[in-house]
Structures are given as C-alpha cells and as structure tokens.
Image 1 (tube, rainbow, N blue to C red):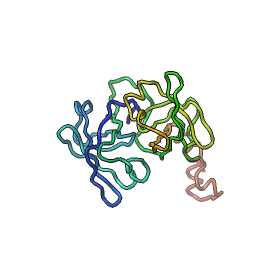
Image 2 (image 1 turned 90 degrees about the vertical axis):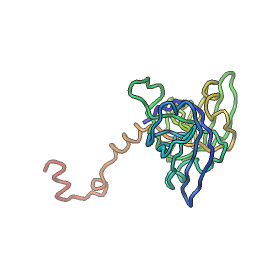
Image 3 (image 1 turned 135 degrees about the vertical axis):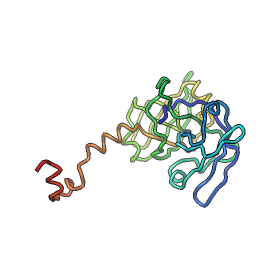
Length: 214
C-alpha cells in the first residue's frame, strides 16, 4: 500500500527485455536508506518487488500483464521514474490509498501554466472515467493528485510548483503516456452494489435459496 507522495526521482540504469517482460535496474538514493530484498516499491505508480539490490540501486521484474497495462514499456536507459516505498504504519498519511495496481493509461493532451500552477489535461477512456470524480483523488504515475475538472473523455489536474519540480510531471509534454490508478473505494462500492450473476439471470437454485435464508 502506498500514499502517492513521491519520495524521490530515480533513474533507469538498464532494461533487460524479454519477449513480453523486462527487468529494470533503477538507481536511487533516499529509498535505499530502508530497503530490503522483496520490498514493494512503486515505480511510476506501479507496485514492483525489489528482486535484487545493487550498488546504489535495485532491480525489479516486470511481468507481461504489467507491461501491457502500464507505460513501463516505454522506459529506456536514462528515464526518470517516480519512486515511493510502501506506506509505513508510523507515518503521516499525506496522500490517499494507492494500491500500485494500475487501471490503465492516459495521454497528456495539453500542459499550460496558470500563475504559479501547472494544468495537465489527460485523455483516457470511459472505462476509467466512470471512477474519476471532480475533487476526487487520482494517481498519475504514482503521484497522488486532485481531479480539478472532468469531461467525457478525460480530466484535468492543477499541480503546485513543488510537485512539478520533484516528480516526473515536470518532464511531461503533450502526447506523454501516463499510468493511472483510480480511487480504489469507488471500485469496491461498485462491486458490492452489483447483483450476483444468478440474480441478474433470474436463476433459482438450492444454493441460491440457502444463501438467502430459505
């Protein structure tokens, strides 16, 4: 579990690519102060496992499912990535509940300045927009942000200078692909409110009757 508060920018040292998977080696500093083999680390919002520790960095395996759902496939040696260690129980919860399980990707359609703020317009499809609400939380490349505006095919966020300067947001331009994780609470609520398969189809069985107290 993560909070979406980025701890540092790491740098991709190398990528060993398989047929549909890869192994990332990432250089870091701050997170290495308290990292152990097998620890979970959010890399651009994707929960990865430190499979080995190197001098000044760590390696992590990226499975085919993760490659297909996220923007990690677009990384190259020298790319900067947002890094966050798993949430500590003895710290402040500064962002929101972030699982590190990416729902999909979005595309930056515009970046514009508004006094001291920077606006980012993100295009994404309706399957994700149903979980994105104005003034709700959204995770973009692992960064906990607030949704400022929504539309049918996307949304906008307004970032403060500090966030832009200490994360990869400062490197995003029109056309950049970003990882998106919507608020997990909305997905659980939707699942709980959905009727069961039997209720949808009107099927009555002994198991159905027993589960409803008959």
